[in-house]
Length: 182
Image 1 (spheres, rainbow, N blue to C red):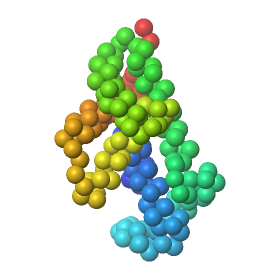
Image 2: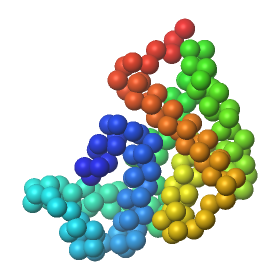
Image 3: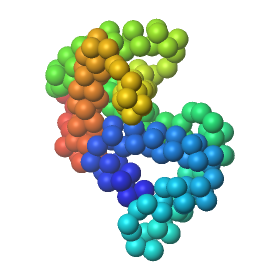
């Protein structure tokens, strides 16, 4: 919860990937708050008050996952909303003549995005979701100590730079510092 709050304020891309990890962590614990408490939450060196807040946060997420039929797969609506917000900003940035570097970063990443969508068979999936899934999948492979080809590594690097740029624009927009109108 505390990490999520900080990331949501500082780096929306990292926040989304973190929240996907939390969804998977909850699933790994069988959506059981007692397992989360004993195997995960107990490891935190936090005050009793913060522990109560953290447990409540996990309980709320489990409830949302149950309500949204995301106990086994998929993402919570709160996380889908991040993709929607980022997609809206992405489209605004692409249509603006004031941010040509963003368009250049996107068009550099686009061939990799198209290739990933074709390989996954998810051609109707939002482009940004494809990007996040690629980075999340690579992170999982690294955690499993599995190799990533140099070609895939290069693609991931381009996609990561693109998402980092979008995340920076998101922060500027949230702070009222982004002016895209001509």
